[in-house]
Length: 147
Image (cartoon, rainbow, N blue to C red; front, side, top):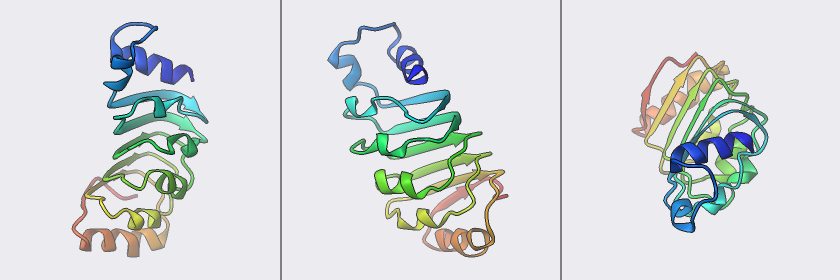
């Protein structure tokens, strides 16, 4: 929760308490160095973008009901992308940089995905040889090196 509180203070520009108008205006946050829960993101009705850095064992169920469209993860232990996709089916842009993601197949479930970026992720052979080409064939833009 500490990462959430720090990010919120940075975004709003002052320490708590915050007005409901200030909380409503939060569109995205960058959470640094944490594990588990992301914090009460559902209290931000227009929350569209989440970036996490140095995160372990994320609780993607915290994102239930959050209208998240952009997800970035850097140096994080995500494991499977399936829980993220299950709770955030509106994601249209994803960045994975030095994360432990091996299976990209959950990205195929995202109807609105238009961009993915991968750097130094240990992709398995099916992701490398089948999923990435299928995403590209669907017109999804990409940047980065896949492995």
